[in-house]
Image (cartoon, rainbow, N blue to C red; front, side, top):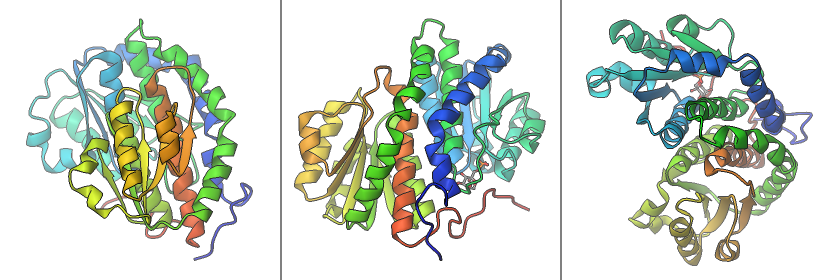
Length: 358
Ligand code: F1P
């Protein structure tokens, strides 16, 4: 294993991570320019409840999208890994009347995702919307309509800008469903706001990782932020081969906190809706001796006092617009942890870019 020098010129994974604010701008502009969201909105208008489906990172994207969908449209939405549909269709598709499915796959070729799209449309008559970054994909061939984000595609094996860009596309689609929602307008401001912070965040994360002596990682989040915690856990495992666990923030008190020592790094993705309750857990875990990372939109004094590292976004807008920038921190933490361990995130151990089954 050869470590990758962390200067942007030498790692395409890092370059792609740092490209996200511009790619988000391009993605949102592309969606607005070709009116694809308007067309998709018209083709999916009959759905009364929604099912978001993916594998790996795309499954956690589905979780973030489902939470965003319900909060923005009021329509019930849930997320499933494609394998659950394939292995337990009676369990997962018991009520398919009025269901609208969204199948998410960066490559558009993941066997389970393509098979799930086929099962939904051909055997259950469920209308399917595909979301991918690839052209002419097998997924698109199975879906009624497909959104393709060309600028969000990436060379990296692990998903970074494809995750955040596809999430923003689905959030934007949800925002458009509710014309009164100010969400769509606020989402337009976020890339510019974060573009001023991302380089400094990258540098600070690199320095923090270099200086801390942790071996185990815990990621905590509630509501839509739980999906970001799940993605963060996968990122650090994929890029640094580290053990990590995920809990709903307040759940961590109910037993898992037994493991807290200084070598355990707890990352809190703090919501604004549940901030007070979540911040109390953060302070308690600091008192138990854990290494604390706070990822939030605005930090209170008690969070500042209790944290070893803080990323404060400071965005004026709805908290759902913070999900994508929060995920970028997780990508940077995973990347620099892999570098510190002498690994190469451009060639993650045991992984391939797409999982194709026989
Ligand atoms: C899904 C996925 C990725 C994972 C790896 C293998 O890909 O599981 O989440 O990081 O790249 O493929 P896709 O269906 O979104 O192309």
